[in-house]
Image 1 (cartoon, rainbow, N blue to C red):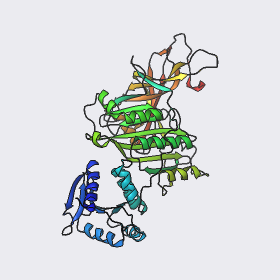
Image 2: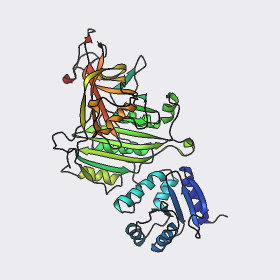
Image 3: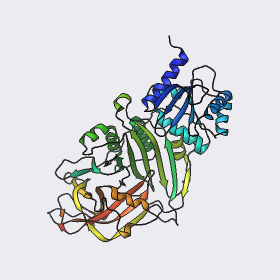
Image 4: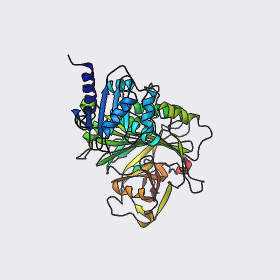
Length: 469
């Protein structure tokens, strides 16, 4: 019969193996002392102690682990797993002396890992940030998923490329660093002198798409999401652009189907998820990495490096909604930062660029009560990017203070917002690009290429200008 402490060590080792780490039991990394488990990948080296006992971790245990760490390379991180938690003295010892990084996992977190409710990557990231940035020992508390059944807004916009049926999102060739597009950017710095308002950035311990759905449900219930929030999913050679919170979750969940339909030849083990939406006078940007490695069928896709950024024109008088959000996601140390630079900017081309349009963005046009069923209007176009893979942008788009504009070079297609809308049946002789608006989202730039059409070949239907909407 295997001893309980040995079974616990083996279980911890298995958790790290399933997360993609290379694992060694009874390692000699801290010679002459033996180490329970040593786990490493290309970025992280972990010296792990598994304590299966009734007595909680105390100062002596921390000192013993610190002694082992001092016999290893400086980049090795210490980890203790304990079913019984840790004393206040042990917690204070970790927070007071941070010359060697020590992370602790306690009983509830171990249970969450067993049940697949949390993943090790997400917990490690959160613990390291809490200790390094805030000097705090952080443990995940099991929060109920109260907002999974909140109906999320579905977009009333669709994308039609050529004669294909309209779809909720489209794919284009792109690099992982390619730009994310939006049809609206809320300028929180408008009217401010030299600043961009206030920003609240909150790291999230999300495990999977279910956690992401719960977060979106919370945000919609307490802040209000729109029907036209933009989402983007970046892979090594492709990017998917779409609209709607519900459509975002469906696209993220169906990564396998997206890859099967994609012309891309290679896929990285992680993809970047992003959702951008406006509310009141500000905007919200959610980002996460979704791990979808080759062995994903064994351990399931999971999220890590998740964050939410809320940008406002200033710090709100009533902070209650934001405090409750921080408490709900178990990140009480989050705070607003004043953005003292202008991050939102609009740049116009000296000469408008005629666009090679391959698709249209369609929105239902609901007329007065009693009229015929709604028709559709064209609010934006999908066009081949005239700057794709060029060495440089036009001079008027080159700005040393807005280097993120260069990322437009990485996208094969542009989602170009139209200043003037028109009925689906009306055919302009051509569309053209007038300029680009840009802001800094949570993990990269958000771009809004904008333009309009030239002469309209009238089809018997009314012409619709955006200003009439």
